[in-house]
Image 1: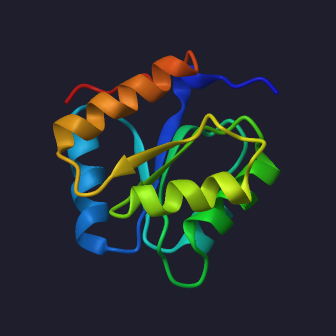
Image 2 (image 1 turned 90 degrees about the vertical axis):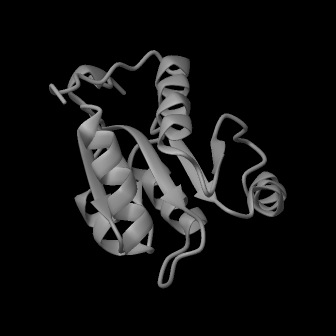
Length: 138
């Protein structure tokens, strides 16, 4: 699959509106194009292959948890880069390894995260897959 990362966006899905808005506004202030959704089902409806360079997904969400959303995203775009954002990263890392033993490249971002730390982590993740995002002027 050919990913044109130069014009891609970041997808953020978190059911906590305050966290979601903080992440979205902070990343946009730094020039990153962001689509943010509080409902994972709506986010999945907007997802399409090659649209996002990076997906940041909360794990504990009503209706569809982050692991279920991850499975659906991977069905649509196996190459999609996904990071899980959670306050319980150790617990979920083990659950993730059991559920997806064939995949070891996906990452966890601990909550709460500072915006500076989150931006640094996003840049690391994008670099790891050779992606660049064309940022707008802040």
